[in-house]
Image (cartoon, rainbow, N blue to C red; front, side):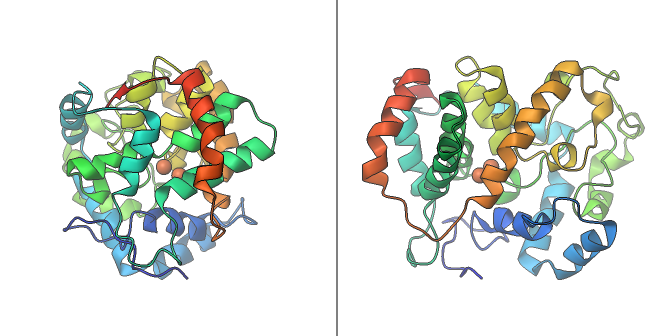
Amino acid sequence: MKSNSRSIVRGGSPLSGLDAWEEDLLRRYPEADNKRDEDAFRDYEDETRPGVKEFYRLNHHRQTLQFAQGKKAQYLGLNRRRMTVWEALEFLNELIDDSDPDIDLPQIEHLLQTAEAIRADGHPRWFILVGLIHDLGKILCLFGEEQWAVVGDTFPLGCRFSEKIVFHEFFAGNPDRGVAKYSTPAGIYREGCGLDSVTMSWGHDEYLFHVVKDRLPEPALYMIRYHSFYAAHREGEYGSLMNDRDREMFSWVRAFNPYDLYTKSGQRMDVAALRPFYEELISEYLPGELSW
Ligand SMILES: [Fe+2]
Ligand SMILES: [Fe+2]
């Protein structure tokens, strides 16, 4: 069990640290149990720590279509900072309180562990790069966003909330639940319209997608944009909003997910030794400063 010592330097959020949601995902989707049954799902909710539960409550109450549209308008002008990818990695590390560095890993090490595991399996270079950068959108916390608007499962807005979304019952407190046109499976969307037309709940996935969207191969962009969309990539929901392209590309999202979930270890990464390889990889696809 990890300590609670590594916490975001920001008040008003229930998680003990930025990693707490991801650590909890491991309880929901244990590595050896890719096909858990409904009973296991219920047990999961019973056993969830109060802080994590409160996090989901806030997320499910407050992620409305209007909220996500507002955040897109606020952030997707990408006019906050100019930073290289490596500078963004270092910026992300500022997010956390390093009071107990022996127990918890800095964000950069989760990203390097993910990338190194992808590299060890012989995947293409752009896939390794996704491992390195996929959580960089969490710098939203440094721009003042609370955890429930940065991490957590993502889901479509403007249509019915799937019952397969974790802590589905908390959507009873979401104002969109009372809007008739959002209450059908397709809601405001046309069936088969494709996920690119769908407004997702706001978080680090969507934000980073927009930072890199013109510069990486399409499978890489899907992995980045939908890696927290567990209702789709693990539960098979929202197929009626997808088009054939989405279905094809989600095989990549699913290929990425085990590297995200199951490569965390206490083993420290030698950041300085790995840096030359990754700097070269970054310069191949995302050279220079990016707009954030
Ligand atoms: Fe993530
Ligand atoms: Fe991650």
